[in-house]
Length: 172
Image (tube, rainbow, N blue to C red):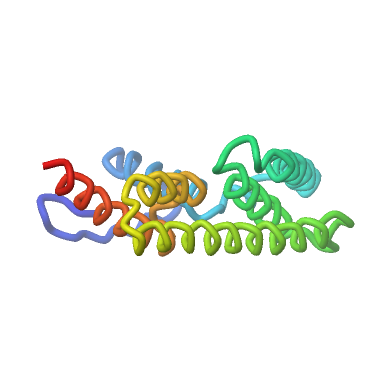
């Protein structure tokens, strides 16, 4: 715990912790549940199977609707990953586990192929100085891969900034 810029450690054994520690503890636990996927340990095996199957159904829905919205394929991948995370502690694995893993790999491959195709189109537009077309394609790529932590997203965002700067320069 950090208090006034100083790091403090506290060990609490067989008693309730100080009230000042409740909020930091709750924030750390919430982080563990949401960002680290530790919520799976809070559920029974039956509940985990149910949640995993629901995520698989959702992933398949997003995958089937990949042409409806640009980020549906990415959303499908996230749902497949959630499905696998729910099943991580379950033994033996249910029948649909292998389907989820293989469908995740296919979705990742499809997303990478889409990225490569659209990225090539953007590069071609940049090389031929079709700045408007390049900007449109790069914006679509940002929708296809919305995760700002993904290197592909960072690369596309960098290229889009350059293209938009050139567009502004040409308008002057």
